[in-house]
Length: 475
Ligand SMILES: Cc1cc2nc3c(=O)[nH]c(=O)nc-3n(C[C@H](O)[C@H](O)[C@H](O)COP(=O)(O)OP(=O)(O)OC[C@H]3O[C@@H](n4cnc5c(N)ncnc54)[C@H](O)[C@@H]3O)c2cc1C
Image (cartoon, rainbow, N blue to C red; front, side, top):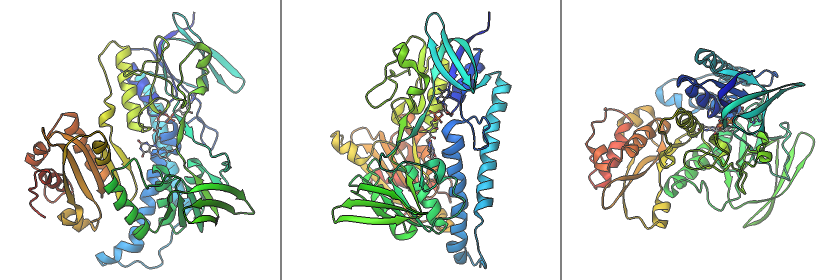
């Protein structure tokens, strides 16, 4: 009889591959099935995050930011640039090398941890004492058996019916990350994280970028004060043209151009672009395992239904990451993967969704953890706020990155930190202190009493904490 695995993981994104490694570390026999192929048609582990998401986008953001620094900021340092130019092919090759290194690193981690890696589509075909999973690659198919199943099939770009993605003129994240040249005029439908990050990359490299957002407010999930500051910086300094409250009417492809008719409060407009990025969110990829035939419960929005411990309604079947409720973020997926592997191994484990940090890798970066002011007001929670600007911080001045601030929101009665909101340099790194503090149930005074290195950006966090008690030192 063929081997019955303790755990079969379907999907090798940051949720699935981490779950498989953790299960193997705990002595369970683990198989991870993944169908991703890269542009060369080769299997490539790591899912959306490593192949067409977090990692390639950060590679291009870094390259384009370096270009912008050289073009706009080096002169302040007395560094003169002449004949500055950008070579997109080299930039893209650097990105591809980073992706290759990291995706093949997962294959090595699988080997090291003795995770069996199968390439192909995994379909749940039978349930009983064990689950049968059919793995199909081309015309080859085999059925493997497992006692526990973890579904980690991730998400897919949401489609706009009137703007079908062809990755030539109308692009999703995959096409937006693979452009071979800078479009002169770039349209972006959707001012979410992906739209703003991609818009920033191509704007810095010289494109005229227009962002069309359906919602009336900009970055509505973000603290309002942060969103306001971001709007100011992105429009005035970066040069993004951002229209909110927009209703897309038609999208028409022409010869090397795409034109968009849209309506806003001022009436109907028409804009023509060389490329159009559609970034209107992502939808859970819950249908790909075919588990509805086994009675797997999927909610109205397409998410696999799970409890607080990622258990589905099918015994011993778990689901994690983008395919279930909660933030669609790589680190959330990974932590759920760890927690589920530990639960299967008989340990206690849990992910606290209240303290998942969020980051938008624009310049300046935006990061937050916990609740924002509008959420606290709506919930009727009494809070105090402490805020400190980067402009009054020595390290930020020497970096030449003085935009933005850190804001700490703390409960009026207990001083417990309820949320921390950052717009500014290295927000993605600074938010870690706030996340640790919130996980430990810290008060604003706790942070205020901790010694922070000087000169460092973390002093802005320190001063914001002092600010909760109205006693900032440097403002
Ligand atoms: C442009 C972009 C930038 C992003 N930047 C960030 C960021 O900076 N930080 C962050 O935290 N998040 C970011 N994200 C989101 C992040 O990529 C996702 O939250 C994360 O990848 C979700 O992980 P996952 O493991 O749940 O699913 P995925 O990464 O989507 O992986 C799912 C895997 O399952 C495979 N699969 C699906 N169905 C089957 C099947 N039936 N059989 C076999 N295999 C299957 C897929 O091929 C894929 O490999 C970004 C996303 C995009 C698009």
